[in-house]
Length: 86
Image (cartoon, rainbow, N blue to C red; front, side):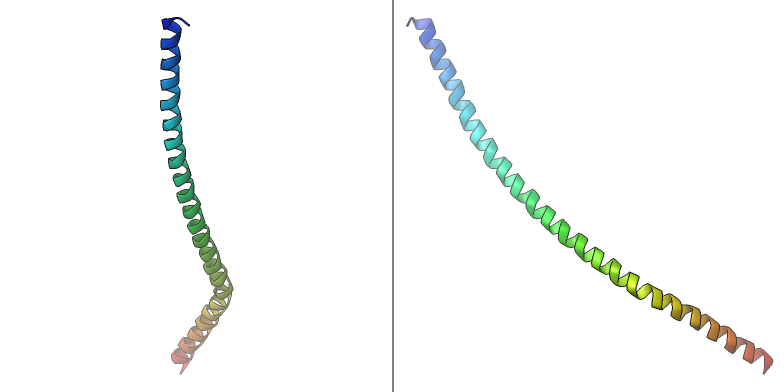
């Protein structure tokens, strides 16, 4: 081989080695970020489930509360009318 080819081989080898080191470091960071994203999505799923549970609880109690409010309004109107008459 002549010197120009040897110099090109050395340059390409050095660039390849640097690229390999940078790629390994980048993959380590990508894996760390992936784990953090997985943790965050798990936490978000827990929050969504608890909010869904709270919404279901509110849904179950909203109907009886509305009924009690209507009955309370009727009783209040009846007591007002009795006070006016009596």
